[in-house]
Length: 193
Image 1 (cartoon, rainbow, N blue to C red):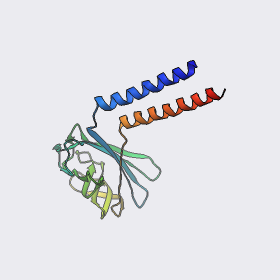
Image 2 (cartoon, rainbow, N blue to C red; image 1 turned 135 degrees about the vertical axis):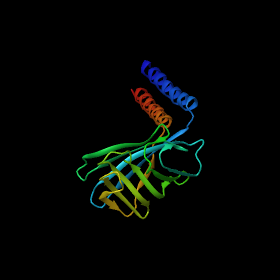
Image 3 (spheres, rainbow, N blue to C red; image 1 turned 45 degrees about the vertical axis):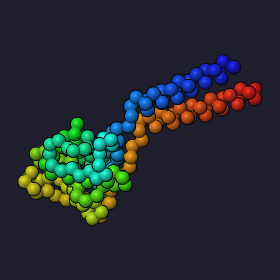
Image 4 (cartoon, rainbow, N blue to C red; image 1 turned 45 degrees about the horizontal axis):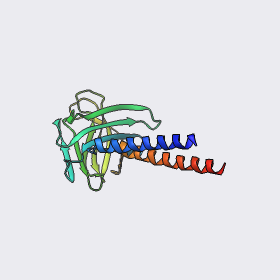
């Protein structure tokens, strides 16, 4: 009988934490991940975030300096053997570090579209960057001289995948729901003993 009460107490505590987290931290920042795979096996993986309470249906950002809606954007590039080529924080704290930066996102369909240029562009020779037009051609390139000369590393037909990152409050809710299931199972098990 003590185990049942302990299970109920733990389940109630988990549920209370999940509800409190949702009430005290209303959803504002929304996070997305993106993945790209080139024809030769090079890849890009990254994430970006924006405040969903103020973002319009279409987010279009470009250039260096303060962004209008994006709060963060980072990307990492990997070779075909999954060796890291570089990681770039294109946007940190709502500020773009690259004058070449271009980004277009539809918040209703959760899709990238149009011109895309992320990663390098901060004045370091050898930086990798990812550019092109979504749905047409996307290329992973390596800067040679910071004067506009670069070499093509890999490319594809413009295909890029975007997925929403689950919110922490949702995860707590799922944990609370799982705890309820465990509590119910224990109760049934003890009743049969």
